[in-house]
Length: 242
Image 1: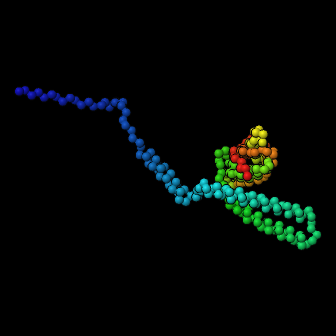
Image 2: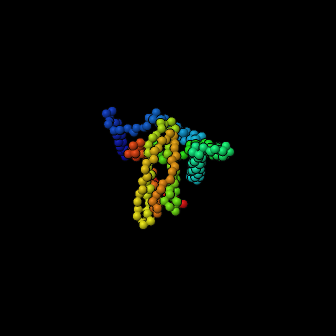
């Protein structure tokens, strides 16, 4: 029997000029950079969660806004009484010392009530949310209440700048009320622009005399430039009926 042994085929060796691509791996410096970024972001999130300011719940924010609005309206009422008593003292120039002393004592009591309310409002204002959607000036929160009988509508609007050290903002506040008349006719009633001077924050209160039978549903709150031509920010809010 004859056994034939076939010669081994020569293994093909690639030419040194071979153009096929080799698999590339990420360089080690890039991997270390990505790991460092990931660790840094994780550390920032941990510090914010552990030592950052406490985030209020929706319920707590609503309660705080209610207390803030009540304190602001109470302050406005007391200031109005102070102004009325001051005008009374100046106009009448009471002859009797006792009557003058009584009014001065009453004025002093009211002023003593106003001072802590100012401090309380300053503390509340520091917790107001800022909406940076349209720039450095924003409408933080507002309250619009229309009496069911008559067209009287009371409003309270808080305007805020994003930073406390910004220069004072001078502009205009415009309120446009959308609603329906008793005969079913829809109309938008725009009030005259209100002068607005804001350092860090400022509240604007007032009362609008709307037509009898007109029920406001929504209000478009706009902040305009000083010439009342260019809108800088705006919000659409609901009107409460009480």
